[in-house]
Image (tube, rainbow, N blue to C red; front, top):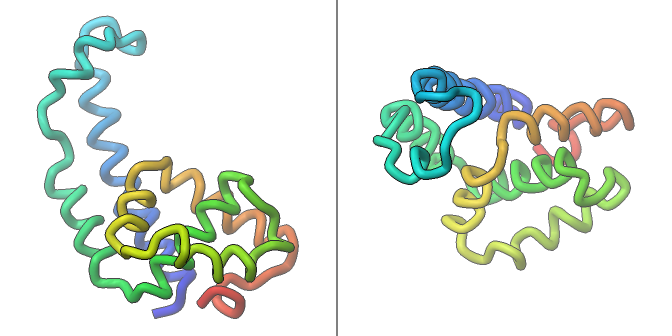
Length: 133
């Protein structure tokens, strides 16, 4: 599977999680201004969707997980595409344990950041499948 296809799948799975979360938040009193105390006692949401996303990520190779981290960091504007290869080499040092890299992916706005990362690569005429795939 090409990296672009994997990214599309991750975006689709993470979007499903976001949709369930958004639907739940709309049911809270005072939405869109939600009391922080209400967030502390949230019930588990999107359990099946989160599990599917975690399982999909768990089945990917370390190289692919690290490529996703790099793509997200580009999307977050932590560095530009000119630093792409350096960052890919460095990401293994940042996350020597693959589980930490997966936690990082799941702790950020993965949908927005992956889309932005792809957009940045596209603007600079860089093919994600040739450079990171």
